[in-house]
Image (cartoon, rainbow, N blue to C red; front, side, top):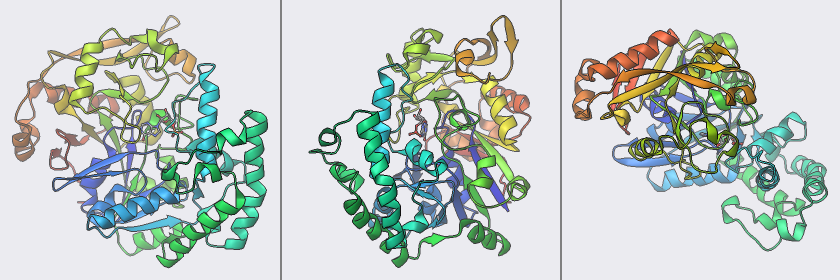
Length: 470
Ligand code: IMP
């Protein structure tokens, strides 16, 4: 049996916690897209683990799989594995041989392109982890895959082909002087000095070593085969989507997106299992009770923006309610897990959620952070948009049109601050009545039952109504 976890908004909905919650009954947790741009914070027994690549289920002793749809920075991978080991865990992580490898030049180029774009207000606000450039190389059929790291000669051949192109791109297209871009500075976090990012010999030496370690630790698999044999053996498997629907490369608000498919279809293409296998299990949409966004792009229900972050869309409401945004940001700890950036804060956006529910086919919902809104007199929901003289109920396909959308709000009475640990013990009926009304409204609109409600930061702070594996 499988369960797929999908972010229904802009990422940071609290997926890691839900994966961890349902992961208790799972044997395998697989990621199907993205790379170390994803930040998961998992709180377990008072310990906090921050992971950006390794599936969060490994904290609970599950087998973690990085599927073929992922892009893998081996430096981050081994760093996270080593840190977990130092903290007494024994992480079992398998890597698809078809997954693509993030190399140092991808990170450098990610930064250069963002710099260039910022001159014309086209900056995406990426995490700078080289995600986009790596997927570009995948689509351009010049990428280096995990399987290539296992064969030293093949790896060299591929590097000899691609690295001069990357160097020329940086120098000749972006006009970057190599001595500036790769000269003096070194970035230890890359494992390879930035100064060596475009050097075939240095890259080969480093990535061959990574390949050796992958072999020694027997970490690589044919993901589809591995997962289907585990399913055949009766294992329970969770597919963990990173990011969210609105930053999906196809279904998100392009170009302010990541370069992969967080929506449920990605679980099939990114693991090597069929859509039938994915659709046979539950597909749970994770919803934050309000909305946050890291990076640029429209946000029609925005309460307050991080000034200057998104000049084109500041007019959409940013600043009007900055105090309330600030309050929610602090209460909810709304700072990027990967980058530490303050997140933009907005009211719940139903056109966005309707679009997400259609794209992924949610069979259940987990609504998080309901406690963060406690104590407010009124909680609002963007119900529909007015744009170009008409009322619409889902998100328009173009970012420009979305940027012109004015939300129509629906107002709900607020709910009081209560002892949430008591609510966790007593269950759904102990959730304040007005919060229940709010939850039931979301469930009715999306035609999917509520499976879980997040009422605090740790796994214990969850009211569970349905358990997909039981
Ligand atoms: P990239 O994935 O680093 O290329 O960034 C592309 C866009 O996706 C940027 O707006 C990022 O802020 C956003 N993004 C990437 N990963 C996450 C995430 O895990 N949570 C929220 N936003 C993300």
